[in-house]
Image (cartoon, rainbow over all chains, first blue to last red; front, top):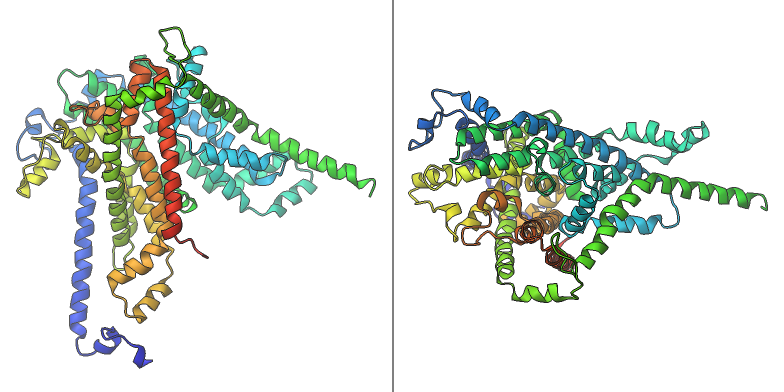
Length: 297
Length: 301
């Protein structure tokens, strides 16, 4: 055994220089923490900046070097922003879209995934391959004809083009849920069937309750996507009272004669806050969901 | 035997029936929102379709017109430039963070993981507006920090040479997603492999190069493929922060496509552009898959 040992093996050299090793190790640990702290600052600082900028007075905003802590703290920009643009209206439009989209994908994707996970039918394999292929198609290819379709339905400048498609499935979520459903033992469904449970009942009473973590992941992704989506509202919405936050915020920035930074930051805080709160309550599902998609890729 | 066949057939028929009932929302959605629009999009790309004028069939002239469109060339160059910087930086930063967070001697790992991840889920519109402020030449945070390092910061979004690098720096806010993917991959590397490498006298660099990289290569591959697909479709930042400027330096492909479709109402030309984007993405992804056979190792192979 000793023959195989390398020259630098700690076991061989550790005894005489033990304290040096310890010191080196300690320095390294310290260095790692310093690096992480610097990285943490790089990421956290911009958002600290977002919040403090929304609380600064006009004179504080343009002093150099910039003040790290606003004093006095001025809350009036939040009120001013609410007065300048219908932020509450935007907020509820966003919420309305988010809720409908989440309900839509939860229902449509779970039931379609159930079909792909549980049944074999002529054509089901081909359809699954088609499903996977649609994930490759960039949204920009279908964007223009979809606009023409929704225009002919007279749906432009309504919120419908932004939520109706969710009720007809999303390839990525169907794939994700199908993979999860495949891991649930078949015997459960056989037993239920023998007990006289209907096909829909097996989906509703067995599959869905057993799939809460996967469904939560899907709901979170969709909420985040809808809340953050900009291109969709940009194409379809013109009226002030139908804009969701993403479009309203952009509009607020573009229509100001002189940029009111504190008000803009205050409005941004109001848009960012729901996503951050959601994250802190449902962290586990966010992280697991991302890791899941990464590994399946 | 004679009696069983119809029962079996009816069982199979029942399964087929329920498959199509349950799959019908997606089948309908596929026909309405994918297949139909795809065919329509291809047809549109062969016409001069516009909301304003009568439609006329033009053959492939939209496609040949692309070769003479100088702005299109600029937008392709800008997009390639952005992707070439944004993909490696966000991959390296994500991997670096994940490796640091994966260390056993680090305190408060889950807190840090969240701190790095939160910026990645922020709405891009809000992030864009924040970064206009952060990249301000005089009072912006970035140039203030550079000043303390005795570097004179550029006029990021106002200078054609620095506008794309500015957007690449901003893109690092989203690195938390890559970090989480890499962290999951790193945690899946068996410790025996490192122990075996140590016994063979491998130093850190060698362990990283010969154990870590091959073992997490599927995650690297995933991050690179998705990174390119996303970078090719960069739109919101440029639309909000720079409107394609200064001097068309951030006129990205999808922004140019959007302008043709919804500002100039040249939907035929825009459809042809969308198909070119699709072909490029598919080709690039295919090349990456082919190359991946040489360097990506999946478990069990």
